[in-house]
Image 1 (tube, helix red, strand yellow):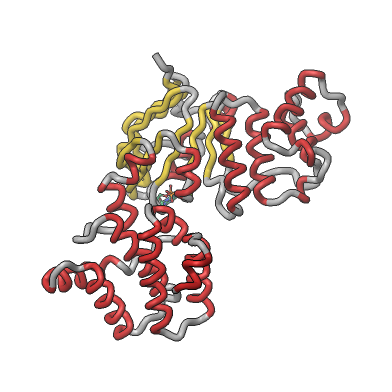
Image 2 (cartoon, helix red, strand yellow):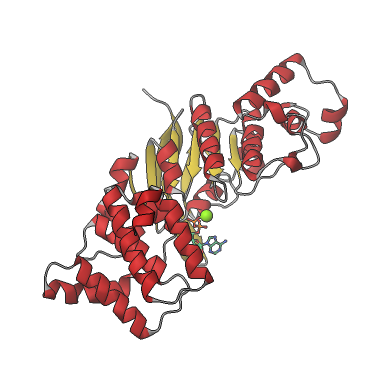
Length: 364
Ligand code: ADP
Ligand code: MG
């Protein structure tokens, strides 16, 4: 029998009547690495806030290792073994990497005693092994201010682990990181997952695919579904939530249309005529019959107003053929308009994300 580390029972959090979490149920086993995704406003941060005691539930309960956390202070909850990593790194920039770790590995936990008392052999071994785990042994004597953003994220994850929490909560650890740094953080979390229970909240789908075994999708304050990344990506409810309301398009077509629309709407500045031309064009491309085309046109007008970041959409493309289609349609749009700086920037971002071989690009 696997042991439950966290169980959330019928949890509701209201802010002035607005339910940020709405009768949410959640359960996680000890040793699990769980990724939580969901569109903006789904309630992800509030979910972490309730677990850490920063926000009190309006209804329902959170059980950690079988204990009800209701009325327990944030500070006490941390001492019970829940560690949280916030989105922006909170490391001491004027201390070295090693000193940052010493500070938390040491039981005495204050800057003065860390700097002037000798650490025990056990503390030394712990810090050395942590430096190894977070891949910063070579930079142990560097001031933290000299680290890259990704290295700071890893250091802070290391500082969290130094406190030996039973459950680690990590909020959007790769926001703003380069691809290489993202992969490093992913590998670090995977390594830690071998001996820790971890909840990661994340937006970046490619990263989620790198690390996720079990994914929970939040939507409007409640659990929409749970499963492997594959199951999640093919769940019609998830596609609907992420990609907008249902249309007569197939899943791959929705993604393509979404991306092309993002390119077309890059600067929010289309005349109604331009908008009409683009929607007519797209409807023509994807409709099977003239009736279809009219229906699709209506659907697309509603559906394309809301923007989804390209880096969420492009990783959902599954084949090179789909990528080529995106490129071809985007090029049509780009070629039919005089494009400005911002549009060009978004287009370049698309090219980068598509990551197609150069010979294909030069043939376009
Ligand atoms: P996510 O992290 O998934 O983007 P949040 O948990 O931050 O979502 O927010 C969920 C919803 O609750 C949002 O609509 C947000 O505006 C609202 N919300 C969050 N915190 C507060 C608050 N302190 N007061 C009022 N509304 C809030
Ligand atoms: Mg959030």
